[in-house]
Image (tube, rainbow, N blue to C red; front, side):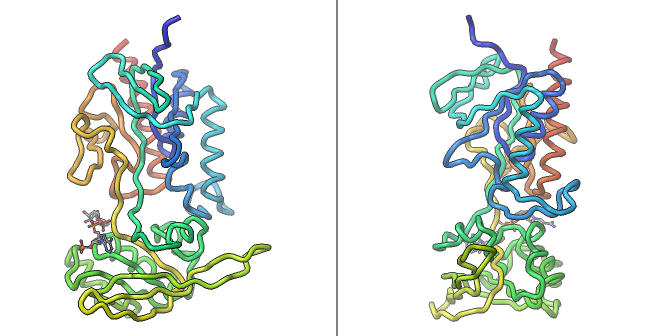
Amino acid sequence: MADPVHNVIIIGSGPAGWTAAIYSARANLAPVVFEGAAPNIPGGQLMWTSDVENYPGFPEGIKGPEMMERFKKQAERFGTTVHAENVEKIDFTKRPFELTSESGQVHRARTLIIATGANAKLIGLPKEKELMNQGAGVSACATCDGAFYKGEELVVVGGGDSALEEALFLTRFASKVTLVHRRAEFRASKIMVDRIKAHPKIALALDAEVCDIVTEKKQVGPFEKDWLVGVKLKSTKDGSVRPLKAGGLFVAIGHAPNTSLFKGVLDMDDKGYLVTKGKTTRMNVEGVFACGDAQDSHYRQAVTAAGSGCAAAIDAERWLAEHG
Ligand code: NAP
């Protein structure tokens, strides 16, 4: 028997991908999701988040990984098929599209929904990722984690609009925020720079980079965990190093969308974010739709990603109806 042609294949398993699956499954489209496999972690960036307190419907908050497990279960409940592997290649010239997965299997689909997400760039320090995964003092999202740092002295790294916005946001909770930037000039807009400079809670550490993380053991429930208590700052001018107390380190040095698979075929901006058409999730190739952080460098929230996943499923369903 010939391989079936799927109505919709969804690549990615963050809030956007699973929401697209839930909607297309409930529209009887029998979607197939490639949730990814190492080094791509199924579930996306929420797998690195501890408590999610800003997703509506969870008044007590929920752990990021648990939330993604629930999204997946909901998608499967309505008949989504899940493949725990990465997509290696897509032939966009064929109709139906042909996807080759890592195992070498070819899958065919009338429509594709791209929900491959983005990853926050990290500095690359020892323990940085480990502490972030454990919610132990390192974060790449002030909106997500800022409220856990009430009364703390915090450090934000970066000189773009994101870093300055995060620093300003964190002043709502922190006793002090030190903004560390590797140069003396900011990449951020002037208005943000003016606000930062005028803010009484924000101190600047310019021509400096965080070269090390300082931790102490902390008792968390029954476990003893490494927890961030400070950083070391290195001058980019003379190489001198000084310690700085910090209850939290927020890294805001940009994000990178996971879109290399689509280079040269799908429209992207100069940073690699997919460019959709107008207010839709349609891409430049007919029958291809994009949602979530792979096409959004602006909001980057779980709830906005989920919303765009819903939109992609509706766009794909309408496209299938239009094309018989
Ligand atoms: P960005 O503009 O690329 O800035 C990244 C910053 O991180 C730069 O200052 C860069 O330093 C620094 N950096 C990069 N790698 C580093 C490293 N390894 N160690 C230390 N510092 C490092 O990224 P973004 O701030 O996320 O902004 C992305 C886009 O979204 C921009 O176009 C921005 O304007 C936009 N945005 C807009 C708003 C808004 O309008 N409200 C808010 C957020 C973001 P250098 O400057 O030395 O390269």
